Length: 107
Image (cartoon, rainbow, N blue to C red):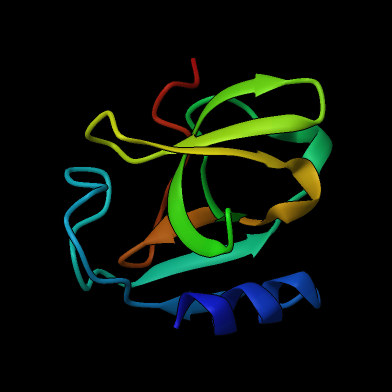
């Protein structure tokens, strides 16, 4: 499901889907409706929840660090998935259950 969503977002679409799993609780709970929109990769920030490919797997996880063109992705429980390039970030989560969702670390 996430591969399909990533392909659509990469083509410029905004997508809605219900991811499963508990790695993003309490930000996103299993089966909540999320909306992911294409993102200007220059605006990525630590704490953004993004749809990204890391080592061949697509995740809806947080940006945990940024070093130039490299972005580290991890879940909301402290597990790090790894580093990826900005061009493998497909979109940013903008809504959860139809409510606006912003970077929880933004001031």
